[in-house]
Length: 274
Length: 315
Ligand SMILES: [Zn+2]
Image (cartoon, rainbow over all chains, first blue to last red; front, top):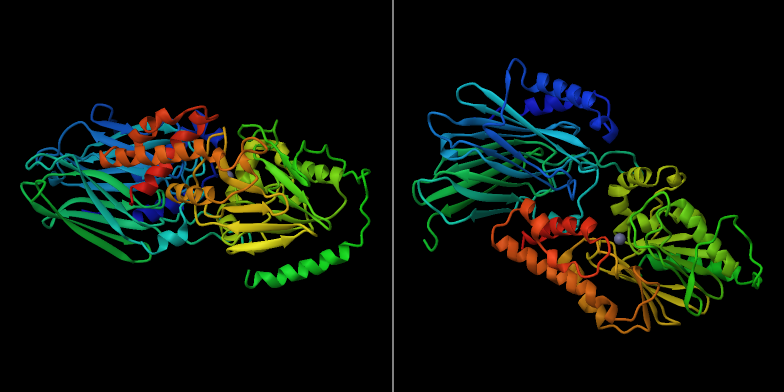
């Protein structure tokens, strides 16, 4: 259920050949449309993108308070059922150097294909959410976000203090556990998620990229969510998602970064006090 | 002091050589730049009080308080300003007071408004927290780019000049019958905060560990900052100089509003986290009652919430 990682890498290569965008360009409607056209034809070649405003809601701040930590959410206006469900959801930050931030893969066991995460936004940009459904349709919605420097400016955390916690995971149930309905959960992974775009002023070399590439969530062994990720995810990648339990179960999360380090954790989910 | 002590001795030898220079009275060499307005808050201790603003071409990045201290042999600058032009105006202000060499430029931390004047002092040792050179490696390029965006042509000539004298724990600098005590602290406002105490007048430069009136920005550790302020409050001083605020304030009373804001913020963020509030909701709703009479609250507070959120959610 995971699309292969090379797709992300190829897109990065394709787009680094484009001119470096600046806010003035991004605010120019024609340039922004041309940029999206390049991305769309590279990423969703041969697919008809349907206006998704009836089925999708993309939530992002019009102006980010911190470009390295922009909360972005997608709400799908129908539940996941065996008959109709979202198979994948792509988040694209048009003006970022690696525009495809993440692809989320869902199953009917996801319950609800909503996602919330935090992204680095490098420039004034459109963000596109593209959802594919099991009937072969592809829907798109977009919103405009004003932010700058999210990829090249490091976050404020003290790297030395963080280093000892690499890969640490936290899981949190949001709201009370209820069987047979979609339950909301949150997972966070301690990881610098270095973009590889911060330049050392003295050597003029870029600091090496080090980021989480894939995450898989299972419920009693059954896939609930899989994520292909890239450098646009904020430091300490963070997700809110749904899962559909039919009683107490074990939720397992495993992650792998671009240096092939793997991290995992598992949690018993069920009624409080169990 | 360890390895750095040796370099320190080297500098002292240089200063001894300079001690023979005549003290030039009131007529000073002019640098051609309009001197920055300074106030002598204690004998030989000068402070420039910056406006409570964000960096613009009109203020040429002059938004942080700067200072200099004059000893019998040399002067030391404490923070150099937000652009080369402001740094030159600070040097001109030093030259109005003394012809003694500026032996040290002490950066209380790495933020642009405190370091972009460093290039105006090409022969001074640049003194900073031991982590600061590394921090500027990561951030310098971005800061320089942002300076162009904020100041336009006024940014011309400004450069990232990292420290060449690192302070690991504490360091004494002798300006000639005048000792400065530099202390490097764990992460608080940033992860490179340093304070400077003029032992002769007991004046304490807190850098951005102390904000008064102008909204504080968190770029290190909220928990660390609160802990540090509580520790520093117990240490007496005749007067304090905040990184942003009046030229001089009463110590430790001047920390009260800042501590109220920081502890209020951490309490409210913890409550939000406990209630499962998301980051997106939190930035618009948490800590609205902490506004008090802070200037630039709306500009700065939502980001502080986001940064506090990202720190405290790992508790
Ligand atoms: Zn600062």
